[in-house]
Image (cartoon, rainbow, N blue to C red):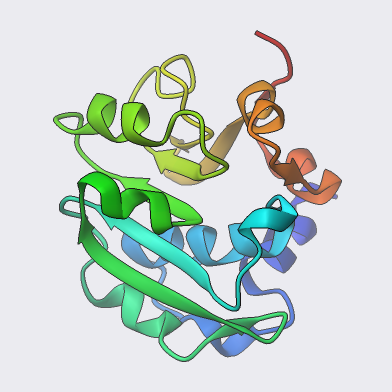
Length: 170
């Protein structure tokens, strides 16, 4: 039952949103794009665009080009790379690679309704929201729902069902 739901999550109604490459970077890009469809931000953060930020460096290469000119609910998705410092506060989702800057990014946005995403071990324990997790050559994710709720972020039940693990309380 979950496999068809995961496939629907990855391709949803905009099957053309991502190339059919199957590379790890393309799968990560698909996850990041589709997270926007299943998360609601507080009304005061509602804008005319969705902003996906890559904190410092990222490992997604050219796969992010697949998101150029894509929209979700008629709002364009903007990609910002190499985002640091105060600029992080303008993001809806921040993808953080490498552990070197992890604590700095989380500290910068810890009280803001911004979804942080990383693959680093113990990311959720450090206050991160979505942890990408590789398991048996498959990429999945865990969600820190307690932290998301504290920030006023609302995750759809569909997204929560797809998560490998959900931290519901601290």
